[in-house]
Length: 240
Image (cartoon, rainbow, N blue to C red; front, side):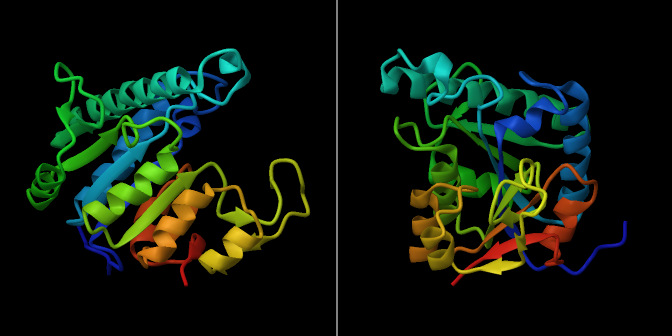
């Protein structure tokens, strides 16, 4: 395989749970996960050290109406466990392609995942294993966006790549507003001041304070992940 010029050598890929649904409205779509696994295989073959954080919104979201009568802490823990389910599904799809994958969970679920230990995660990456971080930060009241930012700092990633259903950050929801304008570049301060909802304020602030760039792009378009890692203009880059 011909290797492309690469802008980032160690990346943290944040996937929303909704991406796992494909065209459905709930759950995990097997064809979508298979396609995603093939994209990740292509990236791995370029020698990239790849870590992944997956949301759980396709299964359960602590702030949704279905959890409105629940204690917030209980609902958030349920959301964390949903991310573990997604992580195992993606691990299975990648292992079927011959990739070595490790799921590291912030919650102790030793029968299905290794406990999250920073040094262990880095060692897996150095051995060219793909690492999936599950269960967020292990704490309620923190989103998986914040978990992605935190893990990126801990493993000393070069960038946070946020793979979504849309091709970047807009000034309005492009699914609802045809006149929404996409930004090619933003500073963290601009993103926070404009209250852009693509990531929560805690995640933006954490990345800003630690000089960690964020690239938001469409993960559903074939080849986009490798283009993002190569530094091509496929989304919105946020940095100071």
